[in-house]
Length: 77
Image 1: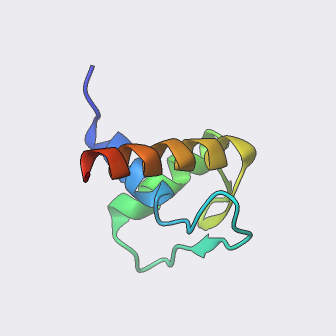
Image 2: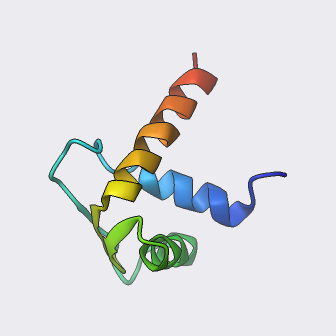
């Protein structure tokens, strides 16, 4: 099984959050790249983020963000 382009867009969006411990959210504007907007929609639909345009990480999203950050650090070591 491989990461799809949609999966990569979702992971890239998750790692834009500062950290799962942060209470800071993000806002995705209507003028953002359509790939980013679609990734946010999918993450919202599956319960990873609180708003269709970003918002905050849910507990599931926070866990996914932690794993995504860890994998990125491992790959870039």
